Image (cartoon, rainbow, N blue to C red; front, side, top):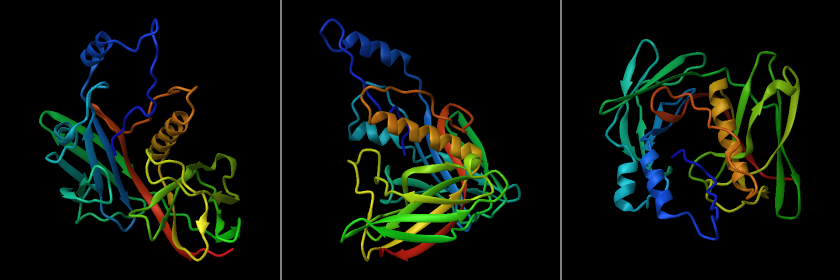
Length: 282
């Protein structure tokens, strides 16, 4: 996933759009940076999507897009005992469709993993860990009409500090999709039972608003993942930018909270996950 400003505002100056001079100035201020989305899940292998930014006013044609996706970097993951160089593969479940995948190191609860990316003379690094998964106690639906139902979940939050990210997946989805407002900090329910209504999320940030409910008799998977604070900070700041982009009166309110060290932005995150399969019924 390419990390980029989500809201583009066009300002009028003396009745005219931004001039070519502004475009030239923006091009001069352009600083090449890398965008990273990497993850490792309990019982899963590491994955990393790697791209780089382009000048704000540049046109993204097929030739430019080929330069945005970095397919030939050296991407290494280590668990402190074993290191593995990930392999770049085509995967149409993601966009861009090239992703670095591992097949040797498998995620384990409580372990720490270091990511190192080397490309020409650039080095990016990051460290994450996989927190202890927290299971759901209950998953149920409430009928909204004859064809749609609202998803609800309930779980017992442990006394220690936790952060969560929640996903759903149906037979029509290629991958797990974050729910609407998918990131949760337990500061208001630490050590307590927590009940939450779940609204279906959009497949990507360019999609139009999606139906928040699920179809009766549809089979879905619900995934609840515990994540470290650095992962929560990134996803929560990214979520805020997405929400701000839907309001034309609000611009960017803050920077993306990246945990990538070096000339890059993004996240390297461990996920402690439980997955549940359920049939939608009111």
